[in-house]
Image (tube, rainbow, N blue to C red; front, side, top):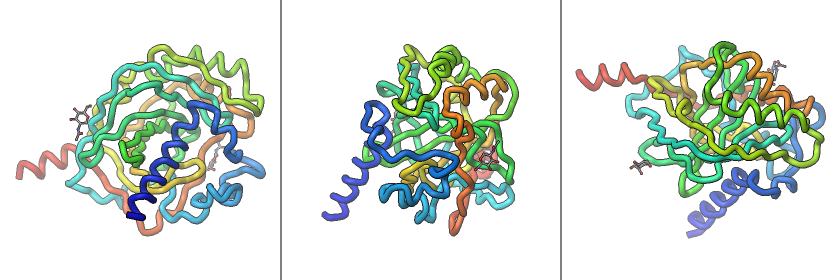
Length: 277
Ligand SMILES: *[C@@H]1O[C@H](CO)[C@@H](O)[C@H](O)[C@H]1NC(C)=O
Ligand SMILES: *[C@@H]1O[C@H](CO)[C@@H](O)[C@H](O)[C@H]1NC(C)=O
């Protein structure tokens, strides 16, 4: 009974963290950043609400060592059913993101649907692969009906135009013109965001249990990191950084200890081979 009530309260608290961006309740949250007195090593002491940032033992991001991946035949394809939708482009000063106005669709994780709520970018990447850091990482934040969070991450190297960012390039320039003045979040409506490139089939991904990579660093987040690194032009990377405040242009949280966790591997062709034997 008490546990159920507690779970309901935690779910509500999480919901408010993720949805706060829609209104201005976020303005009341304690400020944090990526350098100086608000830098990641101090997050845990900035507010009691942020204590998991220093006390948590299942934090994100992590370095993924390919030689230590545990192939898990029980994992399923990351089925994503997204539709085009309207959204709001948000500059929080420390992060650029898109908040979807309505239901965009779901990802199926362990037989359960999680709805896509928002996407945001970090640069350079937060997760590293065998110690390698990439120029950009996209986080697609999903939530289940009972408040559980699942994030799907995509890593980008310098290359061709990313078809997802192309859609908001003009709006990013508008955001950059206003520049971050350190007070209020800037919001720009985007009439239609096409989500086709976000749901491209993935034959391989890495799965582990971690946390949000920004305060309050909430744990029990299910991470799925797509193994295929995608491309983005240098101009696009710069466009995603330009609207941020100067001291938060590098908005990548340092690597957190793996502790007793294992990173699992989903590999489609291996799964098919084993299924047919
Ligand atoms: C998940 O959502 C998809 C698309 O909305 C739906 O077709 C499917 O039946 C749902 N699956 C479960 C397990 O709820
Ligand atoms: C950005 O921050 C990360 C994590 O704190 C650090 O490892 C990296 O060297 C920094 N990168 C740049 C380009 O400053």
